[in-house]
Structures are given as C-alpha cells and as structure tokens.
Image 1 (cartoon, rainbow, N blue to C red):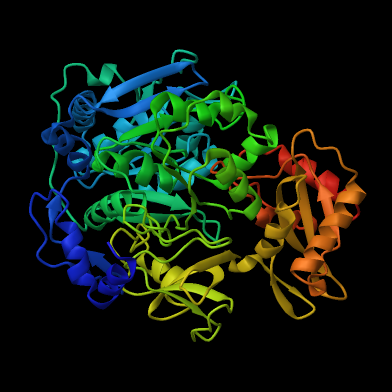
Image 2: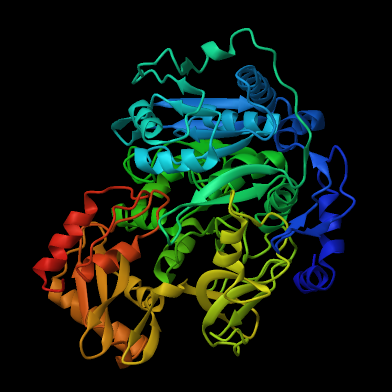
Length: 629
C-alpha cells in the first residue's frame, strides 16, 4: 500500500476509510453509522455496532482454527515460572472466571478494579470483564493505598481483583495490605475482593469481604460473551492530571477494536501466528493495547513478562526472551535499552543468543536519543523504529507503516510520519499553523480517528477543558515540536519542558539529545533552574555507563562544549552533575517535573508512579552538594 494515497484517503473521506477498516472486525451487528458527535463535542466511532472485545481476542481466534496456538507465553524470571497458554486454554480460564464474577453480581456496565502483578490471571481478569460487558480499571500493582483509594472512589467498582503479592526483582511486595488500606481510606466500599494467592507469599483473607481466586470459581457456569454497543466503555485507565486528581480516560469497544487491528497489522507489521512482545505492564496503556487486546485480536502469540531488562538475572534478560520464544517484533521504552547499555556497553551478552527471528523493534514513551538508536541498530542489525502516542490516543499517532510495502524510513530525531487518520498540525500560541521546521504546539485536527479516548470517566467537561479548549477544532496533545518539509514529526518534549533563557525559548529535549551522544553518558535529564540574570538556565543530570571512569570536571567541560557547538552559546549550558540514577515512573519515564522542583528547592509531593522513592533524597543531596539548590 502507498502511504501518500492512504493518508490522503483517510484525510479526505475519514468515514469511508474507517468503515472499510471496520469490515476486518467480527461484529455481532455491523455498525450503520460510522461517526457520531457526542453531546459534549467529541466524536464517537461505530457507536451503533454490536460486538464483544473478549470474543474478538479469544473466541473468534478459536473459530479461525487457532485453538492450539499459544496465545500467551508467561515468563517470570522473578518467580522462576514459565507457561504457554493456548487460545483454547485461555477461553476456558476466561469463561470460568467470568462466570465467577457473574455469580458475584458483576454484569454489563458494572466497574471492576484490577490491582495485580504481571501474572496470567491479570490478563484473564481483563478479558473476563470484557466478556461480561463490565468496565475494568487496571491500577498499576504497587500504587500507594491513597492513590488506589482515589481511583476506587472515582470508578466505584463492584469488585476488586488482586493478588497476594508482586515481585520487584528479589523483593516481594504484599498487595493485600495495600488494598485493605485503600478500601479503608475510600468512601466507596466494593462488595468483594478476590485474591489470587501466590505460593511465595500468602495473604490473610477477611471472610466478610475477601474470596480466594480459585475457590470462587468452583462449580460456576462458564459465561458466554455479552454483546455491547461500539460506544460502550471497555475500560477506564487513569493518567496523572495537573490538578492532582487522576483523569479516568475512557476507551470504547468499537473504535478501539478497529484501531488495534489496524495498528497491529499496518503499523507493527504483525500477522496471525507471529510472536509479539510488548515489554511493559498491564497497568499502562501499552499493556492494554499491545500486551493483551491488540496481539490477541490479531491472532498473535503475546509475551507476558514479569521481570526487568536487567537484574533478572542480568542485562541479557531481553535477549533470552527473544531467542527462547522466537520473537518477531517488540515494543519497549528507550529507558530499558539505556539500562541494558549501561550494564553491558558493548552488548557482549547479546552474542550468546540467536536473535535472528527479530524483524524490527519499536520504541516510544521517552525520547529516543541518537546514541541509543545507533547502539541498538548496530547491535541487533534490524530496523529500530521510533514512534509516538499517548495514553489518551490508545494507539500510535506517528510511526512507519511496517505492514506496507514501502514503510517510511527512520529519520534521526523524528518519531516518523503521521499515521493515516491523524491530521497533525503545529500551531503557535494563537492557534495559527507555523512554517515547516518551526516549533510550536503539536495538535491533531478533529475528528480524531477510531480508538482515541473521547471522554473522562464521569467528567465530560474536564475532557473538553483539558484537550479541546486551548485550540478550538483540535485535540491539544500537550507536546511541543515541529514538522519538516516531508511531514516527519519531531517531538521536543512536553510544552512545559521548554525553558526561557534570556528571552530565548529552548527545548531541554534538544539539549538532552546532544548530551546523551557523549560516549560516557548512559542517560541524562536536562532541567531548567531559576537564574537572576537570565531567567532560567539549563542543568544536566548525568548517569554514566558502567565501567566508565572520567573526572566530573572533565566530563562537564566536554558536555558544555558539545551543547555550545550544536545548540549554541545562547543555551547557557554550563553545569553537568553526575548522579547514580534518575527518578522514573514504573513505566520508565524520567520524572523531570520533580527534578525541577528539587532544583528550585520547592516542596513536592512524592509521585504515585515513582519506581523507587529512595532516589529523590539522593538527587536532593547531590544538588545541595554542588550548590544549585
């Protein structure tokens, strides 16, 4: 297929284009009206069609003759467990667990909170909810009780599904006390908590509310798939909000199914029977779209991995998975590869494995610096594809179309071209388009394609004010960047990652690109700090590669020279501070906003998404030592 032709078709006749794509979905009742407008000004796709997302992911695959094909490879180095679950076996598990939920009173339209580690039961739980037409809300396992309580009060679940523990490398984290505390803090009280008991740590159950995961399934009738409307919600996924109150992004069934099938085949180039690995967690949007629903709906075998890129047992973990399961393509955040590179700079461990099954890899979630891109490409000898999307979009916005004959070539620093259906415009502060190469606000012209969120749970007005008000007629992504003359998109970072140095608006992401290219640097974060003369000046926080020995002063001089040469003296980049590690979310994103607050000696709230709270005191002490804060 030709990109230009497809993009033009989707732009000029979006309803006709996506109606054609919708024919690839096994509807119970095909939609008659492709696009409708909601009362609050957003757009809904295929609202009047009837389908079931669990049916598409499981039952339909068996009907296509894939009952004996592996649906999920479960690999858990942290618990020394492996399992190959066929589509036939998965259907039995899901139907039985859906029957157990139905016996507890869960029905179409009810909400269920899932607070679980990366174990197969978590995928079963999601699919069982979808089977009944219930709305699941997965909360990342390990979230603090207060954060879980906030989500319980907003979603008002009938049931909470959890496990006795999660495992972080060698540390066992008891989940049940966290859930109990959250319920104690919450105003809404769920009727039941189902607990999957893991052998390494058993939870104490309260007979008034708690039920054993497997005992609750004894003797129940397996549930069949309940038809739902295309506009009915499949799940709520909470993302951080600027007010501190998480936003419950609502994903529909119909548009989402069409988008996932389209993305899996056309963007990622996957076909039925292929092995796909989304190296993330079900607590994030990647886990929903491309660990569970997308790969299964496309007839692929999905990797369900409970572990880290390093320390499980070492930096060869990813290479082992690719070799053992003959992974054809995978998705991961660049931070995981930077962690691997930091431990094994020459990639020696990869030589111990057969990686020939790998066709290409995709990265997103954090900026892919040129240094990491080149390291990966040279190490793996396969195309490395940067692309970009958000929790709100649910599937990629910019990417090469690897399922087509002539996919767009990667271009350094770019997340590639817009996918058909996404009319990306770069706007200035007045909402006017800027010239090619000029930076501005990345916005997407309405209507958005199928699969993109069109509401916030119980708060339509907040969706409009958060995303549709700043630039009328557009969805405001909150990201800044530019397009070149060939329509390649360059994301420079969130619009609040732009600093003002002596009146010059400069991207910290651009400086990070330069700094990360230094051969001693494993990863970095550039933040702006207040300066009485210039308003703001940039400071780099640097993590060195394993085994590198270089004097801090010497490194700083070299980095300052590099930024001066490639960005310019106006950047006023004069400080580079070596730290042991950077604070990140559990999905691998560097917490730059917190770093800015620390550097400014401002009070901050411990982020609920942080991977390791002990990192922040380390950073604070280091910044005080060098006299910045």
